Length: 183
Image 1 (cartoon, rainbow, N blue to C red):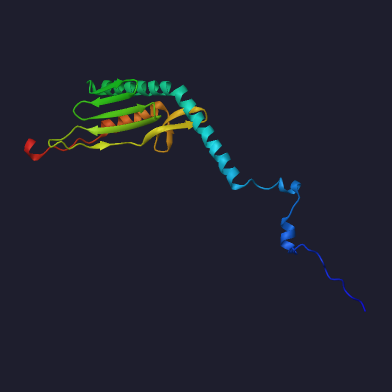
Image 2 (cartoon, rainbow, N blue to C red):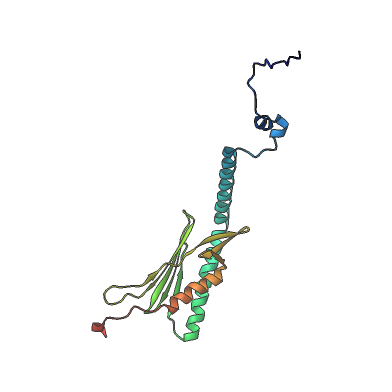
């Protein structure tokens, strides 16, 4: 009689799938990093990107801001020469640029250096009952390569192109209608 030997191992049996999962330390090196390591690497990349953006802002914002102010002033000069009157006035300051159109409206662009933010408002001359039209164009800052740029919405603009766009919106803005009593 042939008797088969019974297995007398004290270890529990492993399935074939479990045996496939067990790999040597050399084989484990090729695996993807655990999720915690990926998140940490992502946070590090974000921190590096934010630091680089802050450095570019600090290095370039004064030049970008002064060029933008010069372009607004140049637009106003051309506009005034074209109509033959001094109707559009631009005032450039370290943190604001204000363009005023006589009897019609105002453009205010404000730079917040501390928060690295730019905001814009275009307002019409107020009507009889204090009603005004105020628009807030979606301007901001963008980085293209190693250049700080002004942006309108999601599109980066050169300083002169954005100045022309905003100043054109100001001069083409419809005035608030007057009430019947003041006509």
